[in-house]
Image (cartoon, rainbow, N blue to C red; front, side, top):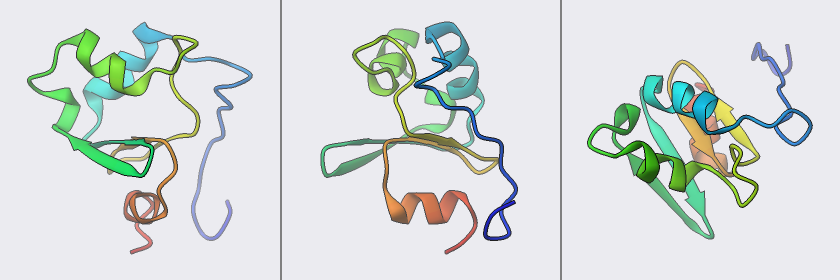
Length: 93
């Protein structure tokens, strides 16, 4: 526990999460956020209305694995770093 937030660390650089496993996380997420450059996009919960390919295109890196950093909480999932979204997902805002 750090800063009163319980967490489990899964370093996707050491243990990549491929497309099949990534889809399991993405389709179950209550909210989806992805950061590309300076822009944070919010996608429909569970990627509703998106094909598997379209959803994976937003969240997989060039290696074909889930992008790092990725944060998954009961509130949602974000790929990429954005302090405002992290604070929201961690219940700190």
